[in-house]
Image (cartoon, rainbow, N blue to C red; front, side, top):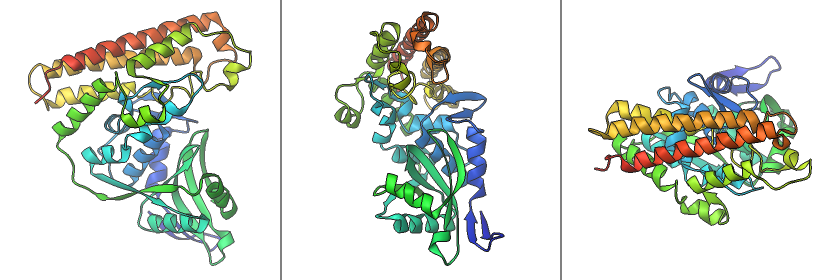
Length: 359
């Protein structure tokens, strides 16, 4: 952590490890992460920021694949045409608690009433060497501040993704604008190291969620979005719509949340996280006997699902050329890729359902 006074005489605190962790994970990408050489398009920004907080706090033996799985979203999938709410379902399953369980990374959220209240929380946390997670379309992270005796000279350094990537000093005026837009909410911060659960306990929860949520989502998701389709049924509905969607005005696919962006991200890219986690779990031999072969087989299928997602995204994703959704040469391969990811995921779930890992 860097503290002191800058060239303009402003007192400052900067958590350099957070900036380094963010740059290492996101690598200048507008809305993505690179993990173990694998590119994840539009992953859950909340989890990306959480990962940065963990690294900055000294949690070096954890990576994004594990965080994405133990926090819940790698087991989630939901789809409702023209609705972006399913992409945020990972926020409804208490991800902070789920991450703390295997890692010991305690976490809390604090509310504030105005810009001054938010500033005091951020300042106190940064002095303690802790970043502060805020809301900004998706999420941002406050990692530094500067101030003098004049309140209007205050500045705060923020990093984040979605939409785009930003990494800049905000003036006090810009900070107040952020509070006005996203205020009356809360900010998140690390608390302390808490007791960790046994690896087998965490693994059982992860495996049960992967199986159970493929058929029925957590109640919190169903309550918030009763008309959506979930799990394998949600993927099937989406794949069918990709292959045969009713005619729309030319501007529809440019403006709609239905396309391969808001309606489903970040639910697809983290399928590879499931593959990585299951492979590690099998090699760790937390479970005895033949259970580990089932886990390896399921990992292979989740990897296949991820590769199919990548094919689909290349054809019809956020970076596809304008009009790609109305182009049969892209629409047809995209639909076929969506069917393949569905097939892989079905086989993976059946394998996990059959695995003799129950105690």
